[in-house]
Length: 191
Image (cartoon, rainbow, N blue to C red; front, side, top):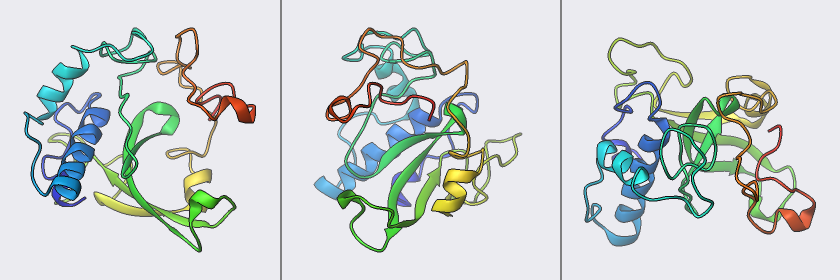
């Protein structure tokens, strides 16, 4: 992940955390699976332009970019590892590249002790964009205990209610099976 985040911090301090996360995840995947760099322009500007070129499978949500599914700044990319994750009621996103757990967390149960986060707000010297201050992590890579993760309001410590990033407004409210079969009708709802 350190190599994948070489182009951080996010180039647009106002709302490109998701775009910077996509950039790092794509570089990580190319390095890990193909042993090289992406074979296309992977700059944050190019990713921003691609997000405005393609519509998401759920249609346009009326957000910052065309491929958005909500009213937010827009990221609709997911991978197996690492992942991008929204924090502080959708105001920012982190890249999560792993967890510390007593056993395989995909098997269920409360066995995660901490989460390894990467913050696009900071560069490798732990500096935010020029003219700004640190907001979330104190270092680009930071490990948060599960207790802090679920209790601090700057992470996931309060309900999801940011009016600038509402529930997706597409007709199917963007759920991905098997969520609906487990009685969870929305991809996110209050959290």
